[in-house]
Length: 60
Length: 485
Image (cartoon, rainbow over all chains, first blue to last red; front, top):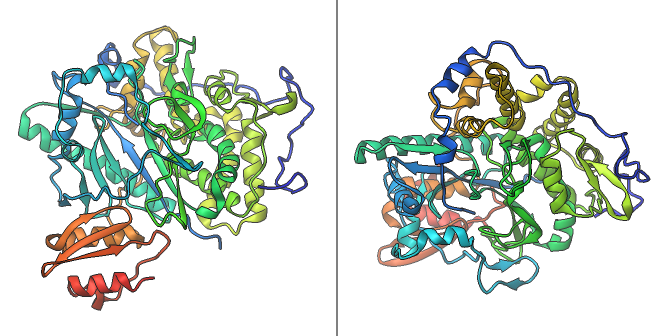
């Protein structure tokens, strides 16, 4: 583990920031791609209740 | 050049047989694994398995189990644990078996990320081949999903294994790797509609976050940790630790698998030389869940002393430290360059980001559906589309549909030839000297030749490049193995 003076400390941690500051990353402007017909065609074949029926044993 | 870090991936698959339920899953998965049509050796050696040993220097009396899941076993008897597990050791050196009702495939150990991903994809193919054989034999169809949740509160794992020097110890390993396990979901999560904890969440990044409830412990079935402390090195315990990571998701996009493991390798390599960034994270579990559920994509992480950082900053701190202190190979250089690029495109070009990261690809897919159908995140059908993204059959999988539409890239071909790690020795023995094998495990092979039992230790840090003479017969093979160290 590095000690406090090593360069491996975060580059821009702004350690004085408090929760609620608005200086962090922000959500993207999500643009939806065109041409979803093949996807939607395949989705129409799916039982919309499929997930309700999907029960599994807990694993690791 | 930094030492290559040996790694393996274990994938438990979602699994159900036509007209059968979770209450039958253990018997069904057992029968399924036994239908594997390829060459395999039956005779796993459990001597070295110690799931209750803890890296912190103690041994648990018992592992915790999910009380809800245990109800499925009421009044049932399954036979011996060896019969239930039905281990198959493959000619690649990998392993295929039944784990708590889930067919599980473990890759052969690989030094490279490319090999690891190729063998992980080979596991998908093994599952498909087994399904075909099982369906032909029983006349019942099988559903296979490469995911980690059933949306009803059950979860199963996609585990990662990394060889670490024992000299590192628990404290340094936890501090050096845990922050990476916390933040890498941004670049490798598989995404999930809703939450299984009762929280009102439309969509989250991680399939596993709802099930991660402690910072570190040795549990895997219940009360799962962000950092797993199971001390089961599968090699000489005085020399090595096997870092056992259970908090990651199964990936459909192979590039995400590559990145997921590469990011941990960066953290391990930095930790081993004492150069991992120090992050004093206030509440790792709460942060793991809040990053997963953050609809703003700010990914803030509270630190001690009322400060905070972001997942982006934590990732960049590892990238910068790795560039400064490690003699990186090309694969890890790529992980860093691509990671930085993805953090940029996440907020500037989401479709480009979604080409490489499952949670984003799936989210984009669901948004296309909602736009077309005029529904929103309250549409209960979304969970079914989420599930079908992970369907292992290309003709049904929504991930495969995205590949067909060129919204995500096609995965590379599976790999069938093991790297020259100890897995190669195991696979070669299965393929060529199976009739002499008595048992096999990750760290050893036991042969019986002319009535004499002979154990061979397999070294995890060794590259096995054998001369042809050594492969002439079982005796030359055993002798060559014993001379490796």
